[in-house]
Amino acid sequence: MITVLADHNLEGQADLLKSVLASAGWIELAVLRIVTFAELSLPFETPDRKERGMVLLTANRNKDGADSLEQAILELNQPASYPVVTIANLDRLLETDYRVRCATKLAEVCMEIERFLGTGRIYIP
Image (cartoon, rainbow, N blue to C red; front, side):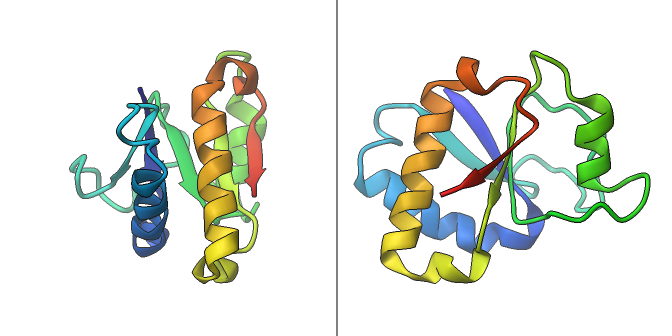
């Protein structure tokens, strides 16, 4: 089972994805589980440069400064690194069709994680 860490700024949207994943049977199949910073007792300001052995689910695209997520990906990505999964359009996650497409793609990434290791960032849907 792959653990997906929902970035702290999209925990509500992660709940929407969890609902879709549960209704489609992905959670029951133990393909993935989505967790929050709070569930893992991680402070919100935990640096992006820390490897956690989880897929990070985010909407963050910025490359502002040496500690930005994009800079961390550029500098630290290795062939065995888990990808950062980025929701391409967070506002559209309220649309049922878009939400289902995002959840399905997230499940596919987790099911075939070996294929996505070292890719850095994957945009969904």
